[in-house]
Image (cartoon, rainbow, N blue to C red; front, top):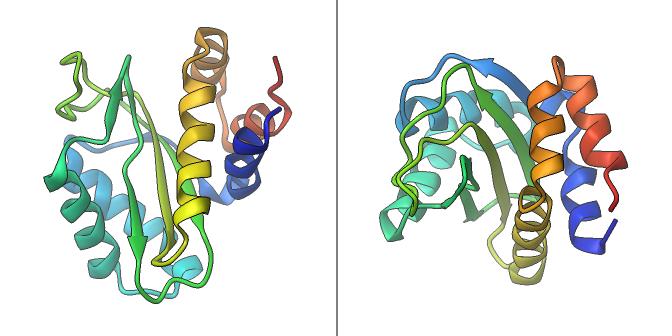
Length: 155
C-alpha cells in the first residue's frame, strides 16, 4: 500500500461508508453526504453541500469508468474527512466517458491542506485504476467489508 492509498483508507471507517444509497443525482448525493458527515465535520450541512457544488461548477469530479471523487477544501474544517458512497443505481455525473458513477469517494479537507488534499486524491485514483479493486468493492455487502478492503488492499 502506498502512502496515498493508506491516507484515504485511514479516513474510511465503517461509519463513513454508505452502501445502496437511494440518490438519483448529484444534488441528492451531496445532501446525503452532508447529512452523514455533519456530526464529524462540525459544519452546517449547507456549507458542505455548497462547497461540493462550487467545486463541480469548475468541472466534473467524475474520473470515468464509473468513479467520481467530489472534493473540496472547506473553511473551518479541523481535519480531513472522507466518505465512500455506492448508490443503489449509478447516477449521472458528467463523466468524461459519459458513464454514470457507481463508486463515489467524497473528500473534504481543511482550507489550507493543499498537500493532504492532493495525496488523498492520488490515493483514490490509484485504487480505482485497479479493476480488481473495483470488482472486489462491488462484491462488498456491508460497510465493514468495504472498510476492510480499503485498509487491506495491496498490490
